[in-house]
Length: 408
Image (tube, rainbow, N blue to C red; front, side):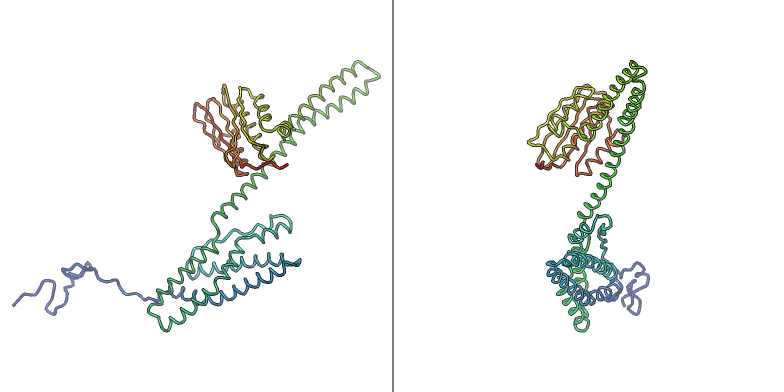
């Protein structure tokens, strides 16, 4: 009689000691995973979402069709465009509800688009135009239009499968739910590039406003402390000279002569202030002559090379002038350089500026030398600002500005 295998008892069963590690005797095969229900909570959520597609799609289609037809017809009247703008704002709310439904039932992680900044957009006309060109509202209308046939298909498929194809319904549900997720992400999610651009423009607008306010304060301070004070002293001096004109003509003449000198100084300060706002040589003769004038006031010899086929727009030309002017001031004050150079040229649709000096280097955007302010100003107009200044020099500062043709 053959002895029983050590892995098998007398009843033909499997010894418990061989099952402790989840394996079945000498074959070493893993047990099958425990069964789980095909219709789990996640599947039922997807089924609910697909069944709700039909009523939601019908409502969305009726809304979109009404907006497009009625709004398109009424655009021939006064109320057409405002009604269309309000309808697009309403479609934004429909998209918000649909994103919430997808997050709740499908678990789709869809971010909310940036709200329209209507409160900061100026008058009614600007607000109307912003609402009319809102891409989120238009994409939501497109979503509502194409959802109707898909909503009918998903509703009928799930309803029939619940009674006929229930063994394969979880697989059908998952496939159709994935299509729903793709549609929501493709049409109702915010555009990454658009959102990034909006954030950049909001930041740039703040920089422009702060820069303009700082420039106004600087001009006010220069007028108050400079030319205004001199003109006040001039008026007082002329008043005293008038009183002494008959009593002491010699003293009155000396006071008038002193007032004449004050007038010359006040005029010079006003010219310097006007040059700081917008120099006349830049308006009359362009960047080449204006930068040569700035270079002549630098404490080190500066070579200026301007190679432009035409003059850029006045705003771009002014930004380029003040950028080079401030960089040359830094060269004079901080670089301890012997020579410097300024090169200006056009590369495709960009205006390129490069200021180089053979000084001690070490210039940085965070060193408090005004470099960071220049970088922010150029960034506000889609420009770039790059500083290459190793210790010991040389320092090369490259700036890019968008090229815009001059009008008129």
